[in-house]
Length: 293
Image 1 (tube, rainbow, N blue to C red):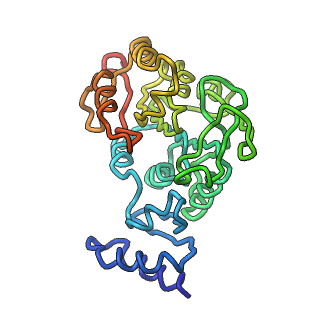
Image 2: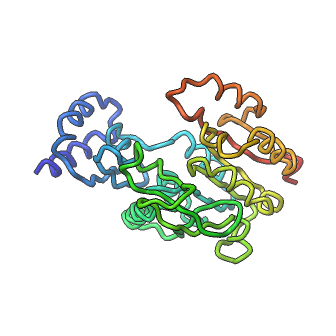
Image 3: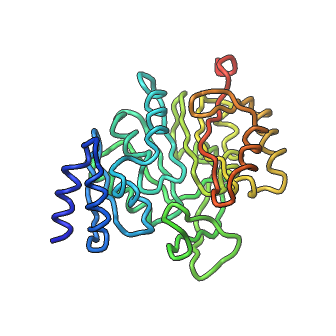
């Protein structure tokens, strides 16, 4: 009964600008509901689970989409052009679903090392009758192989924090990893000239970057990635390696408003960030206009 009533409340408030009363309802109902609930936004829907550590809970609590600013930037880039979208660390599909629904003719490849969250993406694909997304239970790194991956929720603050581990534990499974270059070479994925890659893989981002050198060389590519302490700590000489990678691959670094930014500025901001926070936000790597032509 509580689920039925709360779904009705969600349906009423999801498109309302003033949600103050809804927040009160959520604070009262969250102890009695199990879900999942359907959140019907403008052009797409999501299943959202009220369990405290489920990443989709944020949408249910706030009645809005995750990372909407980033998604809108990607949608604006794709507008009136032929693109391929690659979602590395797709989770329940916060990026995959809105991009697929708004662009039903483009190819989308979504990767996650966690079978558990990939199932939720597949539920959302089915909910939205999406046909242009292929999902893969692979990790993305610099070369193919196998690594241990831990997606036991008890070890993390939420289901968006699952990650690879250096050793086998009772909670980890061996997961196949690929580089994006190898996926193209093995004809597992097929790319258009224009390409957008989103990477959110809990410190594995630089390894993924090192595995897409041919893609960067041969495509007009925009790479969205999160700059975090976990990323910086993933390599012994990360600062030097990251700067050299950008130079060698003729890339430029931008913030989300496409203002050019130096890598030294990112490290400076991260160094001043409160120890309670692990990330300073998302940034974009791409080639300059001259290098794209």
